[in-house]
Image 1 (tube, one colour):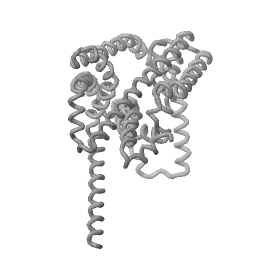
Image 2: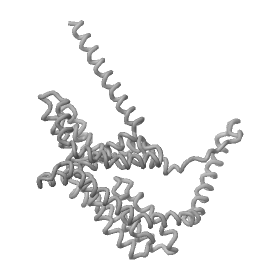
Image 3: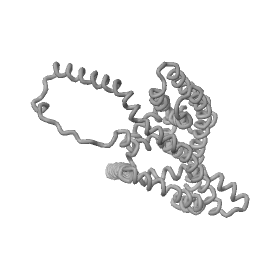
Image 4: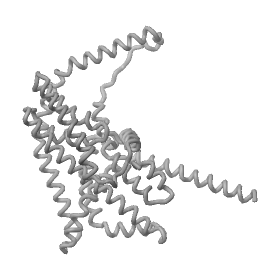
Length: 356
C-alpha cells in the first residue's frame, strides 16, 4: 500500500514539474518571440472581425478566397484613408513640438528643481558613499516613450515589417479557416472535440464582440469629443478628437491618456483657462458615459472581467510588451477566461476573473 502511495506521489510530482516547465517554456516563447506572437494575436483579432463579412459573401455564392481577398482589400483601403486624412495634421503637429517643449520648459525645470531639493534633503540624512563622488558617464538613449511603444517589436523597421505581414496572415487565416478548424479539432481526442469546439467558438465570439464593440464606442465618443474641440478652436481637432476617444477606452487610465494630448496642444493656443476646462470636462464625461453605459451595451456581457483581473493583466502585458501589451491585455485576458469557463477543471479560475 505504501509502495502504491509512493508511486502515486512521484507521478503527481512529475506531472506538476512537467506543467511548471511547460509554463516556463511558454512564457519564454512569448517573451523572446514577442514580435511573432504580437503579429499573430493582432492577425487573429482582425480575422475574427472580418470573418462574418466573409461568411456573408459565401452565402452569396462567392468563393471564400475571393471573399477573403475583398475583406482584406477593404481593410487596407480604410487604413489608407485614415492615414491619408491624419498624415498632414500629424506632420503639422510634430512641427509644433519645439514650441510645445518651450512652453513646458518652466514646468519641467520646476519639477527638476523640486527633485533636486528632495535629493539634497535626503543626502543630509543619509551620508553619501565614497563612490557617489566618482564622475558619472551619461549615455544618450532613445526616448523612453518610444521604447515603451516599441517594446516587444524592437524597432520602427520591425514594426513596419510586422504591419506588412498582418494583411497576409489575415488573408490566409480567412481563406483556410475551415481547414484550420478541422485540423485544430483533430488535435484533441474524439470525446473532447465538442468541448474544444465550444472553447474555440467562445474565444472567436468574445474577440469579435470586444473589437467591434470598442470600435463602435470609440466612434461614438469621437463624434462627441471632436465637435467640442472644434467649437473651442482647438488646433488639429480632427486628429485630437478621435485620438482622445480611442485613448479614453483604455481601462482605468483612459481618462489621463485621453485628456493629455489635447491639453498639451492647448498650451500652444490658449492663455485663459476656459478651453482647458472644456477639454477636461468633455473627455471625463464622455469616458464616464462610454465605460458605464455604452461599453456594457455594445461590447456585451460576455467580456465579463472584474477590475482586479483587468488591472493585473494590464500590468503584466504592458511590462512584457509595452504599448502593444497595454492594448492587447484585455482581449487576451478575455480569451483566457473563455477557455476557463468552458473547461470544468478551470471554471473556478474563470469565476475568479469574472464579475460574479
